[in-house]
Length: 245
Image (cartoon, rainbow, N blue to C red; front, side, top):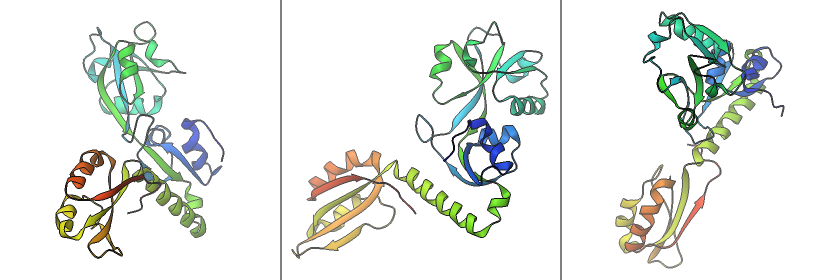
């Protein structure tokens, strides 16, 4: 595997240096990259939610809306998309490429910035406020069109997409298995949220069965004590590597 800067992923696939790659939707739009988007992969450093490109200004700035950026100096890595975005809004501004540490540039080096954020904590630390969310972006598995037209390569890439999406789906889910008395089975099953009906297996003891389900991890903390009170025993929660619907 070859690692390259995120801003070049789309270019390298588009120019056929690589058959397949990972990049953000933001950089596909920035470069107008003519690539195949095979799958959306929703993950980021802070979790499984999209990242945001926002217009931000100093807290005491008179700029309150995008229209107020007319004639102002804006620093950003996302120059091309920002120019097109402002043009569509009828706003003409001086947009400069920022090589990094963009948050520290206002107010002396820029009137506003367009910057990537997940939680907004870095913006707040630099006493900046968000004027507008310009774009939400997630990771995409992409391919160049020549490779995608090859049936053998396409099948491999589709398999890759399935496994990557399965791994991300598993991040927020757990498996739960337990023993349940048959006399309480209906009541216990009514408590179980699952992707489908729970798996029920017979035991050597005819009065008991084994149950197994896949559920959202956030539900298990409250669910396990309720299952125990309904008579379930030997309850085991375990992590998952992949969940393929």
